[in-house]
Image (cartoon, rainbow, N blue to C red):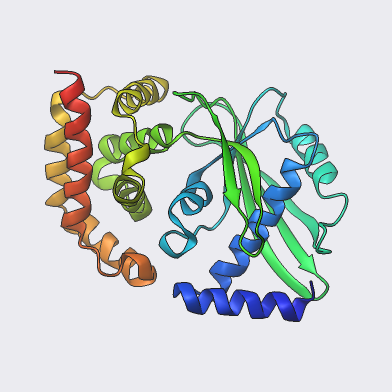
Length: 281
């Protein structure tokens, strides 16, 4: 593979899927880095989650991402161990000749009290350079447990196997964020992800598992919301001019959401919650 070939493939894919070239370039380099993980000594330590996983499930044309979200298991996690791990993973180039270089490692703390890290890298194919980010969290409680997932590569008739969040855990974390943060949650992608997974992956959702996963997520995040309040909280979101404005901005910048009304998205989320409530009546 030459830089000229890769640029042409990315340009054609961007045109086909109505995406920016930058989004396609980034997705390609993210999956090449993920492929490096799957052939490393750390392949069983990583669990894939987040936007890249969602895009893999529903298609790149329906969901792009800024980074690769993962959680680590079965190993001690510190800045030193993460740095050592990164250098071992990127020590050699990919079969295409792509060499990853480590730019920075920054500690992050988000939903829980466990440490996490944001790693910035650059994927280099000769003079073709694409910056990417990898987020690593620890201490995630996953219900149902992680599953073996097959990700189809963009330009090859090949898939790579990774451990990943089950769809119920993805939805549970999104729903908990939507319900607990209310109008303060200005991440429009959370709303879009629940909508798209409900519509495009509906046959994969086990509502009994989703109910258990949502309960577990709320317990793990110390969220106390009575189930009878779920519907009222969604109603309040539908009345928020702030969230409507946030949604319109998201839809304007993401072609796959441009014809989707926020009201329709919230209606889908409400339907999902009703399915959960039925199981617990």
